Image (cartoon, rainbow, N blue to C red; front, top):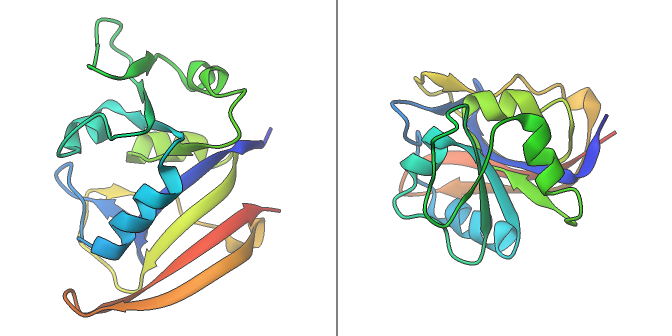
Amino acid sequence: MIYKNISIIVAVAENFAIGKNNDLLFHLPNDLKRFKEITSGHTLIMGKNTLLSLPKWPLPNRRHIVITDCHTDTFKGCETAFSLAEAIDKVENEIEAFVIGGGLVYRQFYPIAGKMYLTLVHKPFNADTFFPEIDFNEWQEIDREDLYDEKNGFHYSNINLLRK
């Protein structure tokens, strides 16, 4: 089943790398602004390590659902879910909720998410956490912006995709 109200938002390298040592691989200020603009006022779904990697949480003007398998976990300003199904139930009446990582959470939601906000960095990175390989035949590109980050010296694209 595809959940049209569940969207993935992710920044990946061309080798589908997304993180190393529980940190991002690159710092793109414009992408962080895009993330804030897109997700503000909505619910974020994430794993515990993703929450703990945020410099400050909860992020303002967003509801946070943290998926964890430890029933004693509590996170100030956040809700917990102990399964994928429970997280889905918590957002069933929302127009759009955003999956923001990490690797395991992305792998679980990738087959069922209806939309993806993808930042694709056009170079590979050494990493220990990867996004599932994207089959672009399963997705329809609805918007794309090709950009260059002078500080980092690489090209990247913001691509919005709908599940076909």
